[in-house]
Image (cartoon, rainbow, N blue to C red; front, side, top):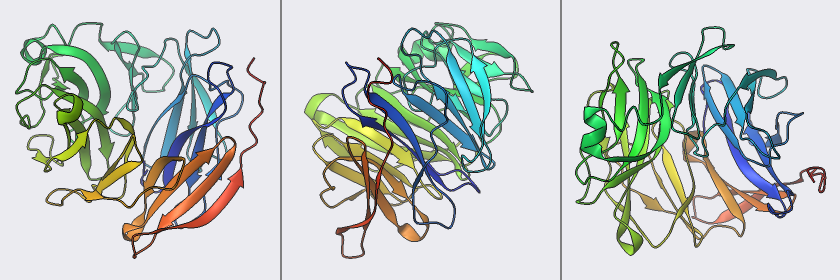
Length: 335
């Protein structure tokens, strides 16, 4: 993801077996104006359960998902590209979805494992409940969608809290906005295709909100990007046939750029409203994330155990290695 004024960030899983607790989630950053990536994982907390991040206005907040007996989610925040970190705490388990945190449009939002949506106090020290488990599913808009599960939180350009969901009813996109009266109403684009839609991502960017939608099942699955800069009208992309491929990573870049990485080494990127999906050249082995930069540049971050290798997509549509580094993974430290 790209954060205004603070470069580009990526979260990747490194190390070894998750069953042996030798998997370590690492936070990487490429500061604005730089071509090199560096390791900036917040110290002091076991991160085998995964990391969730959200940023805005030059800052980034990271939540550690519970692991090894933890029942809460420690928080870490930075405004200097990860040089220093402040700490916080959410006394609950953050959901295992990429957009479980939302910052930048107001007090931080958090989607929890049980479907609760929490909002931080103005000082970030206290949290209040915006929606309890099942509250959105039981609203009139949620019943129309037939919510099967919440998948993201974000802020609308107007500043209203948003929640995203997978729908069981065809013809509805599960994006909901919270009104000043505390109700949740439909706020998504028109549904693409004739199948139920799952909202895989909903991310606030400097250009507005970007959503990644999946319609259909199995080999008939198609992906769509959707954008809004007003919070009212949406523009939806043409379909990207996913076939039997599963989305293993996705993200946003400068402006309205969005990318997806699928199983089988497939990937595609789209520049924004009105653009078409561009299938990328065969990815380097081990690619775990992509990162779009200024000037239409694109990096592939490849992982092999504790080794990070960065490749740049050239104008000739080939990948060239630009960086390699060994991350100091402490195998056995989490056992």
